[in-house]
Amino acid sequence: MGSLLDSTPAKVTVHPSQFPGAVRRQLVASLRAGQVPPKFLYDSVRQTQKWLEVHQAHSPSRINADVTRIYDAAFEDALGQALGQAGALVGLGCGGGQKDTRCLAKLQPSIPELHYVPCDVSQAMTLVAREAAAELLPLGQVHPLVCDLAEADDLGQALDDLLPGEAKRVFTFFGMIPNLEPDVILPKLRALLRDGDQLLFSANLAPGRDYRAGVERVLPQYDNAETRDWLLSFLTGIGVPETTGELFFGIEPVDELLRIVANFKFSQSQAIKLDDELVAFDVGQTLRLFFSYRHTAETLAKRLAKYGLKIVFSEIAESGEEGVFRLVLLD
Image 1 (spheres, rainbow, N blue to C red):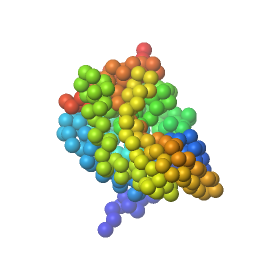
Image 2: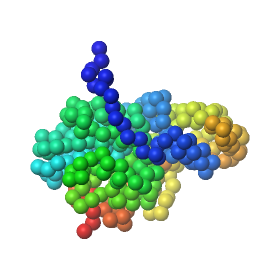
Image 3: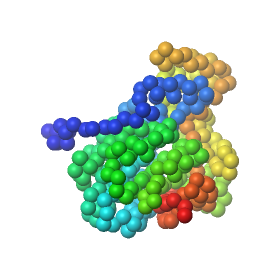
Image 4: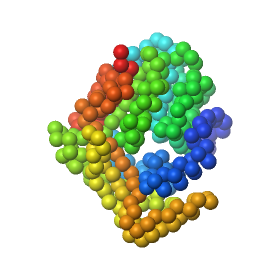
């Protein structure tokens, strides 16, 4: 038997960055440029299921209980800054909303009117997060928003339209920065914050004192059977057989940062049709399927400061592989 929530209509706001035409044009243009935007790796039920298998097998948050501790510590710290006033939690890249819901549970008893905006490129994920939040908040205070953060320049206006103007906002940005270009996304995050807002932010870190050695140490979390299956399923989903090339993992420098990359190198020419658009790949051409930046606490603080963001709280897992930070605007 379904729950009452199953029969309750949901009002979902879809930003133009996720309108079908815009999404299709972005995919075609990106493939022709030799890269796959991260959001397309989660774009179907099949892709999402394969990613969940990767997450279950290799994510520190699944296999290391200490990671749960660092998130709870950040939630407690945020609570201390937000007591006794109307507030909103905005989950940027909310996924299924598990971490956001834990944060809401910390905030809800002490905030007289609490709203939640689960924001993701996937409408399905925003609805899953809405359902999780409904255990804590009235549905009228949950406002799902479908949006591509990297493509939206007016997200602040969309949030103003959804939330009470006086609400102090806590933004969450969990698991996102590794797969986005920091010089693209950080200015957008900075533009969203107003005086009194907070940003809870997680980053994958390179453990140990030697930056490159730390990245090499975590490479097996990416170069494994589950991740290969997930990435190659995207290719087969758009009509590229696995037999037309080979998938390679490696580490590449970008400015002072290092990132793990997965490239598919074509050994056969291949053409695919996406709606009315033809995309062709030549022998020897590479298509970047995936990248993940690994930071250190120092490189992260430096890059954040470049865009007017200051770390005022940090908690790093004992493994050294993940950190959670509370950010505010630089004075």
